[in-house]
Amino acid sequence: MKKRITVFSIVLMLLFSLVAANAVELPEGVPSVLSTPTISNMELMKNDEGLPYFRLEFTIPESMFQLNSDSPTGGYLDVEMAGSIDGEAGWDDGGSFDVYTNEEAIVPGKQNTYYVELYLEDEGGMTETVINSRIYSFKYRFSYCYYYGEGPGEWDYVYSPWSNELSSKSESYYKDASSWAVSELDKANEAGLIPAILQGADMTKPITREEFAELALTLYEKTSEISAQPVAVNPFTDTVNPQILKALNIGVTQGTSATTFSPNVLINREQCATMLFRTIKAIAPSSDYSIEGIKDFPDQKNISEYAVQPTKYMSKLGIIKGDASTGNFMPKAVTNAEQAAGYGMATREAAILMSVRTYDAIK
Image (cartoon, rainbow, N blue to C red; front, top):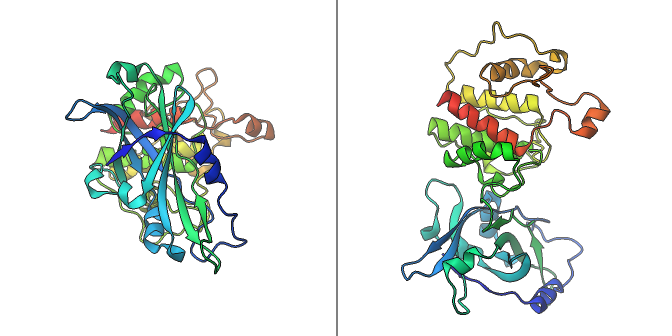
């Protein structure tokens, strides 16, 4: 799908922000906020005529297909893009949701993911060298225009949060990674182990339950070469993410209650170990998972009962090790001070490193 990038208009932005005020109550079927898209794998390419363009992959949550199909109040779903050049807002674009989901743009092997091609307007002398000397950034969101009231022209909008932002001057699969993690992040990317939800994300930040579930699912599918299917009935009221429902179906993850998954809750080290352990068992259920002879960690008393076997087994494989100086596993925070300091939490880059080491150990 080809999209023409146009010069951004501040006036249009201001007019756009002055649409009719929200109705007191949203009409039936119109969500108060839309699910967030994800973009990944941004590349500078050339067409058959030698003209340069950016291509990226646009991943759409299943709930947006449902909203587009239901079309409550007879409204319509659009996609909006915001871009910048050298850090200054300079572009906007977008279009019909149906245009973005053109069958010809489907990315092979990826669910609900489509290619988006962003062509640059040549103002004279546009060459690959010129493009490479500048920083181009892009992000996307959904908007749903719905009808309310009884009078003519009573329309309003609801929006999704903006997606992650990709830049032409950084690797599309990570941002602000620690120097010690870069080589293994490169390795994980080459193996296809970094899910879309983490591509373009700040690697030094803590990882959430949703992100880790997608990471573990990607590890399962890449290693087993089996495409997981979501559970038939979603038990959760706080997520409709099909990747979480797939991870649930194969036993990689569980909810925090019978009806909640808590996707935005940060995950700690013992939970990481447990989810990776379940992933390995899903890949090779008949293997030996004995931890006989593995010594207790000095802080064994702080490890939850459900996580004892997973933490010891992952340590046995050398995937999640204890602290080099004390030998402590540091499974989770157990005091208020530790909680405030983020003790025992896992960062995105550490989680990806756990995944690629697991891949190497069992492939």
